[in-house]
Amino acid sequence: MTDTAPFDPRQAIKTLPTSPGVYRMFDDRGQVIYVGKARNLKRRVGSYFQRTVHNSRTQALVVQVADLQVTVTHTEAEALILENNLIKEHRPRYNVLLRDDKSYPYIHLTTHQQFPRLSFHRGQRRDAGRYFGPFPSSGAVRETLNHLQKVFPVRQCRDSFFQHRSRPCLQYQIGRCTAPCVGYISESDYARDVRHVEMFLSGQSNEVIDELVGRMETAASDLEFEKAARLRDRIASLRRIQERQYVSGAKGDVDVIACRLREQLACVQVFVIRDGRNLGNQTYFPKAPPDTAPEEILYGFVARHYLGRETPGELLVSHELPDVEVLEEALTADAGHRVRITSRLRGERRRWLNMAERNAEHALSARLTTEATTERRFEDLQQALSLDQMPERIECFDISHTRGEATMASCVVMGREGPIKEDYRRFNIDGVTAGDDYAAMRQALERRYRRLREGEGELPDLLLIDGGRGQLTQAESVLEDLQVTGVTIVGIAKGPRRRPGEEVLMMAGQPGEFRLPPESPALHLLQHARDEAHRFAITGHRSRRGKSRTTSSLEEIPGLGPKRRQALMKQFGGLKGLKRAGVEDLARVQGISTALAERIHAYLNG
Image 1 (spheres, rainbow, N blue to C red):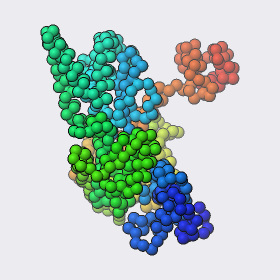
Image 2: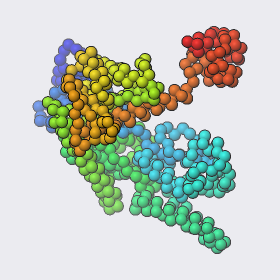
Image 3: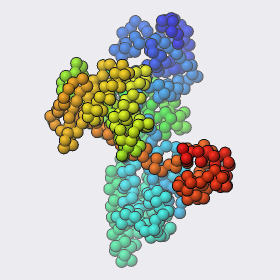
Image 4: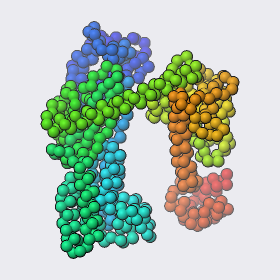
């Protein structure tokens, strides 16, 4: 990139090869604003700068291009994979982006233990055992685990909890565990329940039911009616689960993907079908530039969502995708097995897609209703505070501590689309008097806005401070010292009775206080931001406080590992004994040199 010569698209295009590759467009600040792949780089990039009329999205992109870089690849499929990686890295504003990029969750069944355990798992599958899934969401996994616990009482408790039981826990009392921790079930009977779980999760629920029916009939013939009744209830529960999960005509592993677009908002619905069972669905709202066609959104979604993740053998999509052969080739190479993408469907599969489309429409309507409500709140806030313009970005600060211990400040960000969680920040507050909320607020604000003043982020239109006039004054002082202008500062404090709807508001530069009606949409928006800041602050505070209480101060001494710390604690009976010990006493402990003993003594005695 050059700082002197202006960008000349015609000259840049002349140097481009005709081979496949990836191109990156930069703005005048050096930020990547678009990443694309091409079968022919020269022809594809050149099409952006022709005189033919583009849609408004492409026109807005082209006028901002200040530089161009390309990477040549062997094939178009390689270019697609590289494009996907670069989009995830740079998150350009003119590409289709996904917020949720976590791996799929699984159900994990251990196999190396005497009494195996069922658990939720996300991430790399390193531990021994069997993994069932993937499931579309963590909610689908937890719902399945809940159903399994009612039918097959296989333990789901952590090993540390299981190994230290002397009597059954509550799960045994409510019939969701057979208490293997205290020997209430034999190893063979427990192994049978584990085998049934494996069969059910592998799609063999009919075989499990047949086996349970046989056991029920045997129990009834042996006059063991209570046992027969328990088996009857278990069979009934299994059949209810089957009714919810079974998909007529489904074979193999299939994902059903539908995209709907309305009022520049895109919604993608994904249904996960494995071994004929519907494991649930997940809703995504990919961020796409205006005037992006549904098939473009769906193409970008499939590439972003599946490359680098486990992919089923077939994807059923609601729109015919461009360059579908290239996408299939890239997904096949990435997954290690054949992946087909199908859009022309009939019969049963068409009905699956219709189901996904109906869910996408419903989710889209609900989201638009929520966004309309948020829009009304912002409009009402502008009127309530007599602002010249409607605020686009609100930042709210809160302080949390327990009698001055582990003070934590939070900053949450609200936009017209709702909470912007990737911009949330927490600040560990140090170097202030315990319990001094004013000093804590000042430190957090200084750290936040010094960075923003230096260009690391975006300044808010409205700064909301959870607190009274004192905290508001600190915010005014900090922004004045940093010469930050154009930000409206508002304080929100609870009323005398500390009831929602009775909040007192203060504005910087204006004397006195005022209240908004309890039913005011503007007040609801401020309450939402305040409550979110409080939640975010107290979560971080509890984590920091818990860490400080479970972490030994000796861990901060260089060269003092866990074995040596343990030896010292055993020798002197705790920190009090260590503080009373001299250097010679410390050096007598095995593994503690004189130099290390001096460091320990100096640390413990200031």
